[in-house]
Image (cartoon, rainbow, N blue to C red; front, side, top):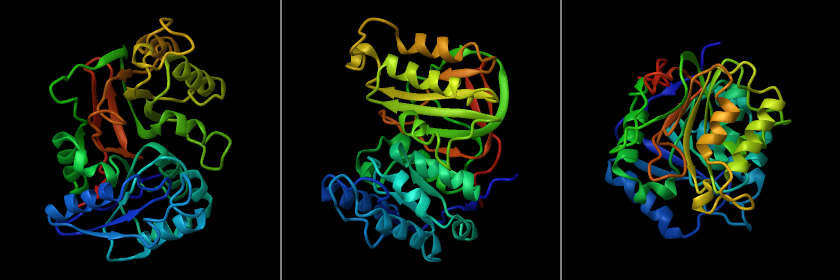
Length: 316
């Protein structure tokens, strides 16, 4: 089945801002994000409930779902960016009208907790979405991240996915070459899709994941569960992004310090699958968060250390 792709963002287009998960921390982060888009000639429209705050959610699930649906339905909105991640996107997923979304496809950008929406939108509408920075990150994005965001949303979606600026090294866990559709997000959030209607489907996929604030044994546990759940059987390849604060010497090793490194865990859990596995791409919670299209075909070259996106993610 061909992926559902949206039109590319044209210069001067309007970015719709939704908050499917947690609320903003400080209002100035939101204002700085709006100013960032406006300084580049774009317009920004905040969803009706985008600034709501109720404990650790940005309003009720109904409000958050209503806002997302309104942004897809509004012909004056050309791309949708999430205010931030946090927690709560999984509450929104069952309240969405995926057929209506499929009738009005638009690029959706977000990461971390937004992984639940990426999984649900791909499964139920076939929509290609974009794992990338939130609005509240805009003012603090690296120039590398910002340039990638504008380039991809503008329609330049195929070609080699960039390596980290100033450090092109990619750790090859397992070599080989494979083709598959890109599926993934934040590992811990993806684990919480298991058993749900929007459970992540890795059959025939190149699995792209990142993580924050875990540990070697936490990553080990997640990958073991995916394997035992049969989710890695039809896998074509694995692309690992940033694993921030997950190494034992970065505060992520308790209660098993100095046991295994992340590279050892990845090698043990993924190295024997018979598919290419690469670690060290610049997406996730690290210094750089280069937009990664989800739902399109890519080629993973585990010998050359490259990921090439071969299917357009937007319509130009």
